[in-house]
Amino acid sequence: MGMGNIKLLLLAFFLIVIVANGCWEEERNALLELQANIMSSNGELLVDWEGYNANGFIDCCFWESVKCSLETGRVIKLSLGSERFGSGDDWRFNASLFLPFKSLQFLLLSNRNIIGWTKNEGFSKLSQLPNLIEVDLQFNPIHPKVLLSSLCSISSLEVLKLGADADTSFSIPTTYNSRMSKKCGGLTNLRQLWFEGYGISDINTLFALGGGANSGLRNLEKLNLNYNNFNSTIFSSLKVFPSLKQLELVDNKINGNIKMNDIIALSNLKHLDLRGNNIERFVTTKGSLSNKFCGPSSAQFN
Ligand SMILES: *[C@@H]1O[C@H](CO)[C@@H](O)[C@H](O)[C@H]1NC(C)=O
Ligand SMILES: *[C@@H]1O[C@H](CO)[C@@H](O)[C@H](O)[C@H]1NC(C)=O
Image 1 (cartoon, rainbow, N blue to C red):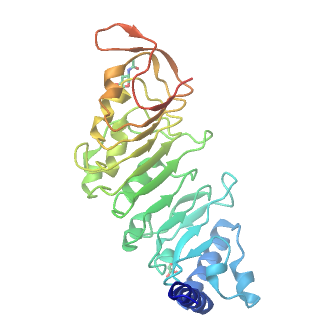
Image 2: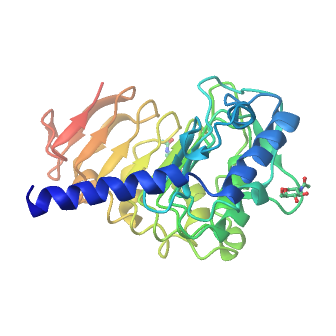
Image 3: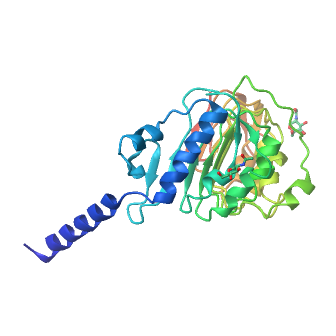
């Protein structure tokens, strides 16, 4: 047996030892407490951790919807989103229930009917989890203004997914409220932002996340604004996101002639999706009309 094989065997052995040790007891208890809380306030959780535990299947790293780090055995991902819109009764979120998961990186809670939070237990408290990089809260009936001001203090975030179902309608202030963003330093690590279906028409709404138009969100690479009300002026206002590579604008109100220069000015843009709009032509610098698109390498229109 060569040295390489021995090393591999040793590695496999250590992995087995770690996995056999299973999850951390404090995290197992925290999962059980979380389930009890969700059951009592949401009435429905699509996992049965208590059942696993009661049947002696105590390694929570193998429980449904839980993912642990292979190295540390700590919980790094909780996939608690539902497939079904508005699953369960109204759920008041309690951030403290998630704080025992000190290595948590991914927290997925879409379609959970979260309507708000219990006193002092909002999403901003999740900023105590230093490794949290992705939060998915799509299709929960919380006003986006409330969401943005609570999430904007989680400075470790790299991916944030928000969105409203077509049936939900919120009235959203179109003007940027500078007082709101002063509370937050800005999500300067944010790479991907989903903000679908809220019917917004002004990019200023998003500045609540970034501490203003010029400071935050400068590292944003992917922006998903599908199912909103943006018109063709959107392209010139996106200059504040210089790193933008991927832009989704399906089903907005981008109509008529589009100035090609505003799109070309987004110099890092590689992918643009404009399906479900009513674009007639792309207009080039000289004012001539062109049917030829000369922007990003990958683009989809109608
Ligand atoms: C929130 O969760 C924490 C931790 O389990 C608990 O101590 C606290 O009582 C809960 N708060 C409310 C208002 O339920
Ligand atoms: C396009 O959107 C901008 C920003 O919301 C707005 O100020 C402008 O009036 C809109 N233009 C048209 C033609 O609707």
